[in-house]
Image 1: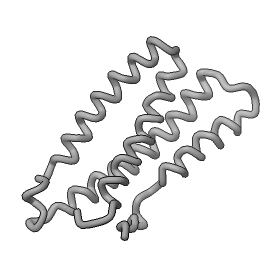
Image 2: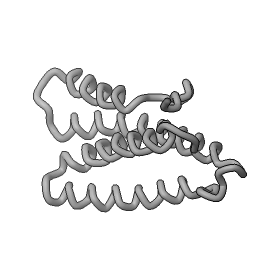
Image 3: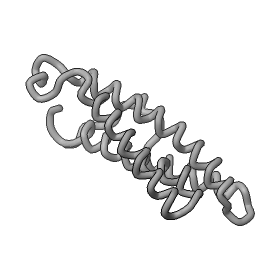
Length: 127
């Protein structure tokens, strides 16, 4: 059976996706780079908070029993490397696709990162 998510994890990936859609819809007129940037920033802020909670939870799950698999700091190091990759990838997308990607790309990457952490934290079996 999969482990359940604790109640203190702020926002699910699905809720973050809905947050973006609702924000864009609230402008009522055609979407433009300003709308994309504004709404993406709102979602990124919430996604970062959720990721930070998940990283703290992951670090707390490392015990002497499972320390042979993981060490304290590995999740944080992984996050730091992921952030470097994400920034580089989004710079490329912005240059090749256009300015709307400057906010949209990181938002999508943060949503994807939330799913990755969910997979690691809430999968079947012991951690």
